[in-house]
Image 1: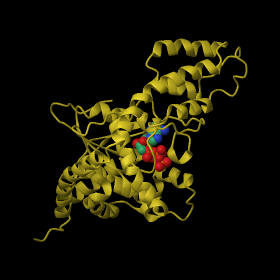
Image 2: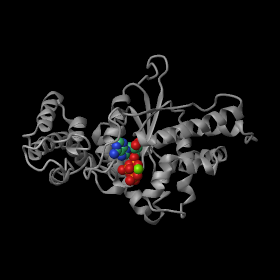
Image 3: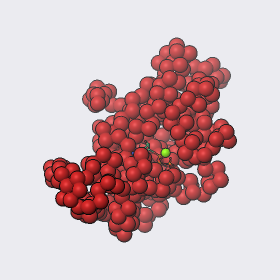
Image 4: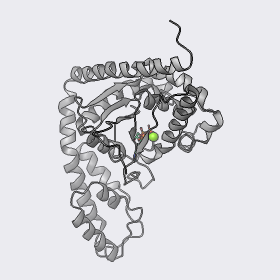
Length: 340
Ligand code: ATP
Ligand code: MG
């Protein structure tokens, strides 16, 4: 992965999540880990995408409202530092909606319908023909979020790559129209490990699939989840050779076990036969308990001072709005929409 040189071009990172539920290990692998790492080297904006969350949650706006604080707590608990990263609330920056409105004229309905992520999500949500227009067009809103901050890097899970491609199409089209490089093309920062499967073995750990281990999970919840983790259905007796492919216990150990050398031995033993799932799961439980305990403790501590969290969000949103407003002014001027 080639990143812009820090010293010469301090890139801006834009990243975010829909506050529709607590963050989970999939988010951690997909983007949080990178955000925590890169916040030291690049200017980073992290967005709580509450407006975007409404595109499929208009019937439960209370859920989105409640989860703004919950997701902010998750960010701070995993190590997002508000002194280094600016956390903002999407709905409180009207310029993001304004930019979306213009960008919608730079994409076609056919192109939106072809977006593979949108397509998959429409199937997942069972919308069939009754797709909210806001949902179908959310890639344009995502383009607004990214370009408002002139972000060059976007740390996301691999399922978001089509969004980045669509954003860059909008950027190129707009810059061509404007006849100057006002907007900045961006690059997805995708982790090597790719997408984390759910505990049930489904391809993706996801809130809507109910197959997550949340970052704030209690010790008992972790224990219960590890018991359910999908392994190898053909590995019936301890002496049978086991399979690693699709084996979620090993996929999680690959992602989180700090002792990768011991893990390699464990894998070899499993494949040879003679190593039971219970031993593998015992290791997984230990790894996850040790990893999540400090996150949970910080989260509980931070949750005691809601005023502090709200202040971080208020300050971050105000700072971010100034940046977004500058971009919106430039975009409007380029479109001939400046009069006074
Ligand atoms: P929802 O069910 O509301 O869609 P989700 O759990 O699928 O929620 P998103 O909010 O859609 O999570 O994802 C936010 C970000 O986290 C995206 O960058 C996405 O790629 C990443 N992400 C989510 N789940 C995973 C996963 N299992 N593996 C890797 N990255 C993930
Ligand atoms: Mg999703």
